[in-house]
Image (cartoon, rainbow, N blue to C red; front, side, top):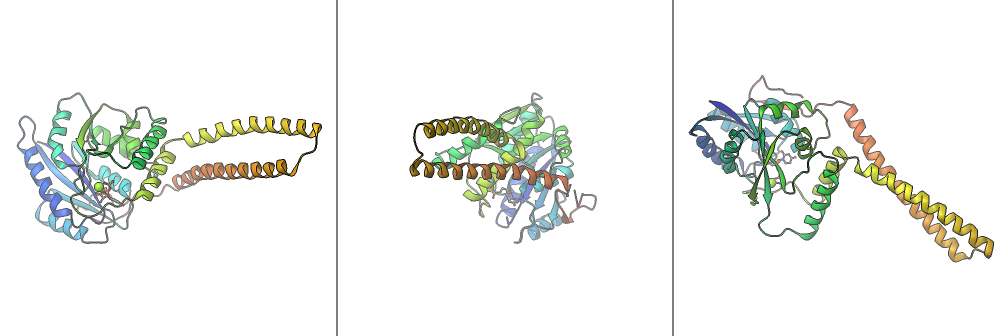
Length: 321
Ligand code: UDP
Ligand code: MG
């Protein structure tokens, strides 16, 4: 019998734990009675410093069911850290990450396992397609984000890609080796390569509880993704620099010629001030972008652990990593 580890990052998901557990048990049953290869399931809950009863509920499950394991963080470290903790402590031959809110439907797992068993692929990644059109601004930003980020990746991240994927052990090992603290998993999955199959499904609403994202945090997540994985903004300001230098040489030449032919009026003086302010602004913006990269380097150079666990279900699990 092979083993499959399901990593479930949870942050304030008290409404979801029991619902999800029920669904996961049904899926685990299906995996146990498959033809050919059967799978036992490990449910690895990562409590990302929840402030509600999430941990309490997980612990209760772990008492009754020895398939349930958990790691509870000392504070909220974010989903990326939770996934990393999961990868570092998963023991299965296959490993999958899925959200606690069932927006990554666990019912897709048996089919995803079938695809991996087929032998043509090393991972199966879920990609959600939207039933009804999303907000225009939202899709515009999403398109722009993928365009920029894909420039820095060997393979394009598909639009609608989730962190929900089922992977072979070898891939998990490579992900653990990627120790950067500014993590962007969707980029990491593409960077490491291997043969991935995209598995489409129609998007579903959260089963209970509330999302931790709003437009602002999504925007920040996208910017972080770009800064963590791409040097496109640096190339952009380099290009801008070249264009501005050429333009200013032309402008200076024009002003000299105008000055030779007559006097410079106040209008032109005002315009000049305007241009200077504009360019100063642009310089500050560029410095800001460079500063952002420096701050990322600074964070990386500290080599802090990705997460700190307050308690784990098994004492062999890594508490700090
Ligand atoms: N999550 C987490 N830490 C956080 C925020 C979210 O572990 O700081 C978990 C959350 O419990 C859920 C998953 O990450 O299982 C996705 O979160 P959410 O549903 O809020 O995101 P969305 O599906 O809206 O993108
Ligand atoms: Mg969700």
